[in-house]
Structure formats: C-alpha cells, structure tokens
Length: 225
Ligand SMILES: CC(C)NC(=O)[C@H](Cc1c[nH]c2ccccc12)NC(=O)[C@H](CCCC/N=C(/NCCC(=O)O)S[C@H]1O[C@H](COP(=O)(O)OP(=O)(O)OC[C@H]2O[C@@H](n3cnc4c(N)ncnc43)[C@H](O)[C@@H]2O)[C@@H](O)[C@H]1O)NC(=O)OCc1ccccc1
Image 1: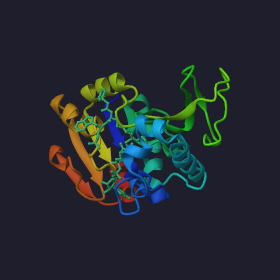
Image 2: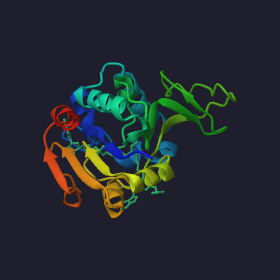
Image 3: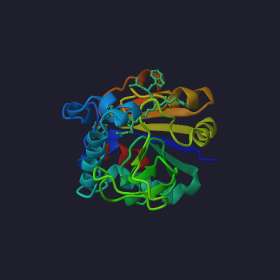
Image 4: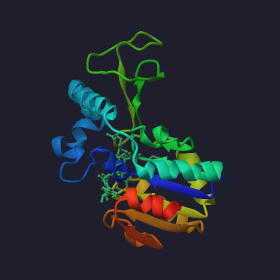
C-alpha cells in the first residue's frame, strides 16, 4: 500500500493550458454542468455533450505536461508503489509526464464506453458523428467519464489507500465535488498527515494540517525536492 496519496484536480493542469472548471474562463462558463456532465443531459441533448467532449479531446493534443506533473513522475521513480496519484482530471498529462501509478476516478477523455455492450475502448477521434462500437457494432458510444450522479471509479482501492497513507497531499482542487472533497477527512481520520498545495484556499482548507498557496508548477517541485 502507498505511503503517499496525492489527489489532483484541474488546477494541476491549468499551467499546461487546460481550462479549470470554476475559474472565470472555466469549463462550466460556457455550459450548465447539468447539461453536459450528467446522464440526463446526455439523453436530453446527446450531440451537445458529444461535441463538448470532442472539443476537449482535440484540445488535449495541443497541451503538454508541466513541472508539477513531471515532479510527481520523478517522485514515483523514487518511491515506486509507495506513491499513488488519484486524479479527478480526465486528461492524460500525468501519464505523459511518466506517472504510472495513477487512478482516474472520474474517467479518461481518451477512452469511450459502449452503452450497449459495456466495452471500454481507446478513443482519439470524435463521438459527435456517432461512430459504431468496435466490439458490438452498435452506434452507442459515450465518453468514458464519470458524470454527476454516477459512481466514481475504483472507490474501494482509493479508500483503502487513503486509510493506509502516512501522507495525503491535495494539489489544484477546489474541494467542491464529492466524494473527492471528503478524502482529506478520511485520510486524517486514519492518522495521515495532510497537506494542501493550491492557488487559493479551497472549500476544505480547514481540514488540512498545512495549506500552502501558490502555483502547482512551483509548489509541487519545491515539495518533492
Ligand atoms: C457539485 C457538487 C456539490 N456535487 C457533487 O459533489 C456530486 C453530488 C454529491 C455526492 N455527494 C455529495 C455530498 C454533498 C453534496 C453533493 C454531493 N457528486 C457526484 O455526483 C459524484 C460524481 C462527481 C464526478 C463528476 N465528474 C466530474 N468530472 C468528469 C467529467 C468532466 O470532467 O467533464 S467532476 C469535475 O469537476 C470537479 C472540478 O473540480 P476541480 O478539479 O477542483 O476544479 P475547479 O475548477 O473547481 O478548481 C480548480 C482549483 O485549482 C486551483 N488552481 C487554479 N490554477 C492553479 C494553479 N496554477 N496551481 C494550483 N492551483 C490552481 C483553483 O484555485 C481551484 O481551487 C472535478 O472533480 C472534475 O473532475 N458521484 C457520486 O457522488 O456518486 C455517489 C457515490 C459517492 C461515493 C461512493 C459511491 C457513490
């Protein structure tokens, strides 16, 4: 079990040019969450939701990991299985920086899920043109992301790792979305030291032993060194 669990949010990818959710030009600016990130929104207006994720998938090819992603990948080289990164992000910047021990609790943009046969397949292209599932041939693919009201991925593995961790670090997250926002309390209840690295205090800052404000691209390498 990992001694260190690092939870990351949109803030760690901000310096790579990936928009966050709640900041001024955040993702939710152009769209109502319930329209584009809920199963109901998908049933109501499938094309808008597919386009929303197609745009984000295309934009992923124009960005690179930053110093914060790279510092965590270097730390994994030292600690191996001793470090687990749990990310709320659906981008692949942790992996492109070299991290391997990563859980995408809210899914991945570069994967599609077939609603008819359940297959999960790598997906680089678009879904708005309603391509067919490579496994069953049904034209019923959706982004493999966890929408509001849906159960996040690998919650058992995550809660076991939090309970065993000596140190829990949260990077670039506003602490507004559950169950991720509750991880600090879970880790602390099991005796972990808790540290927040964020541009500004988050909704859960008061739950942490220590909270450092600043940009992830500076704070994370400084913490790792
Ligand atoms: C709005 C909120 C109140 N609603 C919820 O939390 C809901 C409902 C709910 C459940 N439990 C509750 C309890 C209380 C109240 C509500 C609930 N939760 C759910 O529906 C979840 C599912 C939620 C997942 C939804 N999908 C996402 N994403 C994928 C799609 C997509 O990406 O499109 S959520 C999405 O929004 C969240 C955005 O938050 P952040 O990443 O933190 O980004 P944000 O912009 O908010 O903040 C950025 C931060 O970075 C900082 N920053 C900016 N730049 C930098 C910088 N350069 N450096 C450092 N920091 C920086 C900023 O200051 C800021 O603080 C992320 O989780 C992200 O993944 N499912 C569930 O609960 O199922 C049941 C269950 C639970 C447990 C066990 C079993 C079953």
